Length: 365
Ligand SMILES: [Zn+2]
Ligand SMILES: [Zn+2]
Image 1 (cartoon, rainbow, N blue to C red):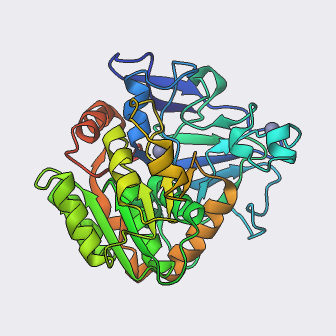
Image 2 (image 1 turned 30 degrees about the vertical axis):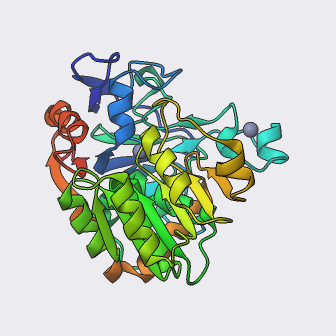
């Protein structure tokens, strides 16, 4: 058999459809028939050549959902649930962390491990069908596969996509406490997920700044209490409104998922003294901001934290929370459009132009 795959041959080149040979499934390997893969902002950055060290040509698609078609000796998923042909699964795109380097065994930050590989990003097409924009995806031995349980289906998980897990990780990183007021900057998939999980984590108010209105409306459906459209308000107006909702203090927690340097400057101004500020939206270098160490950090006494990617525990825990609160988390409704492999270039353009919040690729129709 062969596998049709959408290949990004180089930055800024049109996507191509390639036909690949089926890989030999190694002991411990699993083949998936792709149900859906997502088009995330990272794929747009990949296409613009804004990530370092990417081994083009690649098959994009890092977060995906598929159905097991073949397995060699794998009878349980990463959490010990029975796994069989026909099961619908997702998997942690991050793979091959070494469990031997300083980052892995001393710092316990495997997302900084130099051996780390990521499906759809740091594997070349010559390594095999290791990206989701293809009819099938090969799970190399050791990839952490999770069966969808608790009533979750493919649309739930892919509707949240990578942003679901990154947003969850940002809320975790912010250590949102019961009763906190949480402001989220950015209403893309990461910001929407962060807002939703902040509410579930016990925030007393969840505030959202972003654009366009359709995304802010999705935020309200996911539990946001108040929104500001970035294009219809200026920073001073937003600051006044947010301070008036927070006793003049500002939010206890601010989570940035906007990707613009100006958002960081605004967030530093808005977070209350002694509050926590998590920066999760600067996956690529978007530029610099002025910062005053005295007024922004030292005197203000804030915790300023970055969140880079996600780890397996985020995936596992996010899916459990999602299953428990599925009625409050209509991420499936965030899916704006479905694209075939042939339409993947259009999907990238639509995501880049913010015409859809969540575009998904369905290689098998
Ligand atoms: Zn390591
Ligand atoms: Zn992503």
